Length: 320
Image (spheres, rainbow, N blue to C red):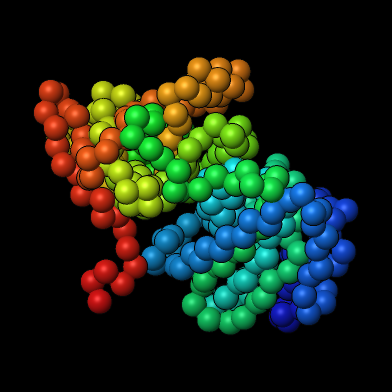
């Protein structure tokens, strides 16, 4: 029997493990109702994933469900927000119960890990498109922003750089390197929510790396009217990315490839010891990769040379 819109919602998206006491009304009405404490600020983000633009047509639906939520949680992490709620809008070419079951499994498995509640959304028919809106909370005046970096601040990066870019090249047959870890980075990115919470009160600026490190760090530099130098030897590259660079001499790939969903953040030197102690104690992966400077522009120090880097990452409509 074919599923209608409301049957689809009830079957796949109303059974979830997370229910917040601050949710007055969730799925089932025209709008959700939420209760926020007076000492909290609401942080809101939204991302859309389109088949053929953000993911390939034959992607595993469970991984896609994970990623659709993960990219939004990554934005909340970059603001130092604790995730609370999400809405989900699905545009589907047809109703495939097996596909929906797998997608929902990936989505709700990640949602349960971070105690995120689905409180509403929409379904419609059309080309496969997934839009997630995520809402989180921060204590008043404690949200991280892009606009606080100053000359002398240190530049840090979580996790590994360029692994998702390598995963895409492997997926498209553009390299003979075999690296299963790169696939995981591409299709199941890990939002750095726990690290974002640790950065409150320590980081002077923060951004999640979705369009490439050079481009996203460039947003911080523009917002703060500063420049920066990155150090090639300090960039946290996986063995697979090291092999790719060695075989192709394409050292720019780790700096320009998107979909890493790591956090890039700056910290005043006076907070370095406390930051590194906190992240090390939590077992969180991080690397000190550069420094903020008063001279405008982004530079890479590599093998004794200073190389000017382009700050242009992936942009929709750039070729229109």
